[in-house]
Image (tube, rainbow over all chains, first blue to last red; front, side):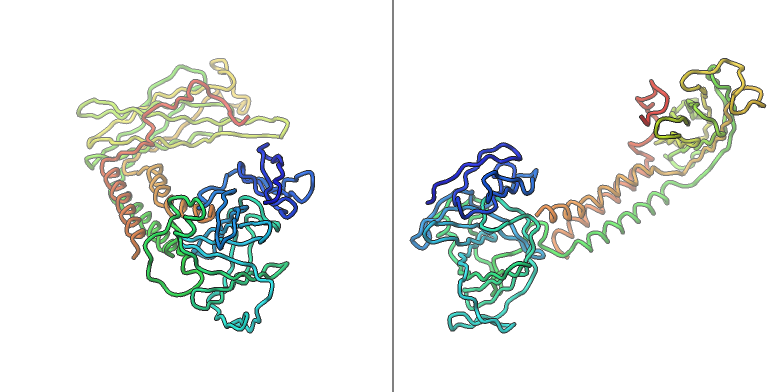
Length: 422
Length: 47
């Protein structure tokens, strides 16, 4: 092997060995996954990745003997085409050069780059007197890169990959913007690879499956990508959400409302005011109290509601606040808050309820003097806030609805995220 | 229909049933019966 050269990753400070010094152009840090340009003496960071690439079948630096040659695993990449994903390992021997090992679901192929280009006539190619038929022609994307490569490899690289088959032997043609490369691929047994290299348990061979011929026969679909059922899943989630909306609307009724009004002096002690009577007609119902105020500034109104059952005199309490602030700072004028708020009571038992509110209005940053005139309304008598209440049974919880929506759509969203993470 | 889709359909039905039961009992974790913990301070919070 060539004399390794040690470099320091400019992204994480990790010490990395370049095993094929003089050949390697791109090196992905084994600690942080950053892609480095090692063609220069001063190692340059090409791209930093936060996530460490993992779950490769063979660890970088592993050595093994195949075809009577000792190979060292220099680089590894995870690639995908549509729903198929697989791993490719770059092997190196200073006398034999580079080779490839390709792994998909425990099945392996050994790749040799071709120096003599096959004769290509579109649907088939001829190489060394043998004809190979086109099996597929797809776009291939690199999703993870780790280790050293003799070209500038990176995550997100895309090539057009065509596969030509002849029995168990295949020729792979990869076309990028810069070049066209040909590789001969032959199937090798998983046991042979396991004997030669230390293969992680999850990537070891499985019982053979029945499937058609083709280079990608081993590249079966990865978990979460194995079925094209994502559109059906989204439709199902949408249908379930509509069903939830219909169920909530149907089960929450009937709606009965009462209106009330209150006026409160800013800075005055809290006062209790009746704002209506409502009747809960189902065994349990939500009660919503919506309040709108007049257009005040820099005031907040504390609202302590009580639903008092006429029969039992038991009270159910809930809280709300109306607040609105304005001002000017270095960024210009600003405002915050709202003159409207909704308060939700849950699990209100059947019965007739008188609705009361303990209301107290306050100024910001401090209460005005009692009896003072509102500067915004100098013709008014005192600084007061007017409030209009509407108490209704028969509402439903929008928070619950959105929680259900999040739980429904989280599954397809996680699948899409997983796909993009490779 | 794939196995994964069947599982997802079961998940959807579970959520629909949960929603129906919670609406029947008018239960939600998002009611306003607990006073907000931020009531100790009132005023603008934008900066």
